[in-house]
Amino acid sequence: MAKKGKKVEITSRRRFFTDIAYSAGLATMGGLLWAGYTQKAKSSPLTLRPPAALEEKDFLKLCIKCGLCAEACHNRPSNIDRDTGKPKKSTLKMAKAEDNVTIGTPFFTPRDVPCYMCDDIPCVTVCPSEALDITKVTNKKTGELDFKMMDMGLAVVDSNSCIAFWGIQCDACYRACPLMDKAIKLEYDRNERTGKHAFLKPVVSMYDCTGCGMCENACVTEKAAIFVLPREIALGRPGDHYVKGWDKKDQQRVANRVDKDITTHDKRSAKKPEDYLNRELEY
Image 1 (tube, one colour):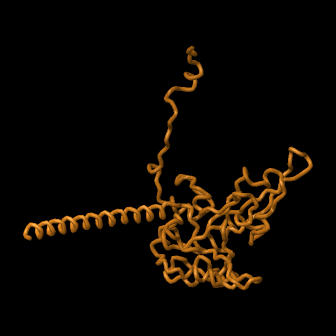
Image 2: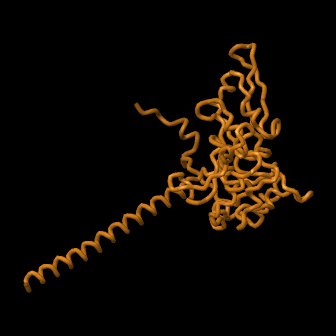
């Protein structure tokens, strides 16, 4: 009996340690999976945020993932289908792990559902944390909300896939734009190939485009030939050593710079041009 009891005790100990190892393994695997999801969710620089969102790093610090902006977007009067009386698909979505966006934060995909630029901008007015800064869409002169001040991104035209650049008449993006003839204009150009027709090329104004994505949503090509990107990606960066002489803010950025802070990289050969031109050819 003593041997049997001892055997049972050893088996129980083994099972105990096995269960601990199994639980530790599951916890570790779960942590790795969650870390992978989190890393993936923060990896996309192409995320489009609601109107008046702060810069991404500041937005993520202040956003409390409450979902009030998405709820306000869903419940807006213009979201009701007049024919069925039921809500249409909402613009704003709260990110899930598979969305490649920081989990629990609001974003939108214009190709699916664009921003309809509501007059009262309900998504911004309900934000409790100021991650959506209402002052960015408030007209300083009138003190009223102005949807034309929205800045969610910038529409970019791919001239290689846009059929208007092929000579096929298409103005779908132009007609869909809520700021027609301001944010998007049509540029007429002679079609030299036919000599009879004209190109009607869509041209986006970086100063007027709000990044609502209605143009992207309306594009008739299988993969949208016009699409919205975050403004800093759409415009790129020319380099800190370039200064806009007409922009006071840009001039202030380099106001304290001295000559020694500016370096010129010269990768040219030390040989003189005449040495290169007069060298003997080697065969």
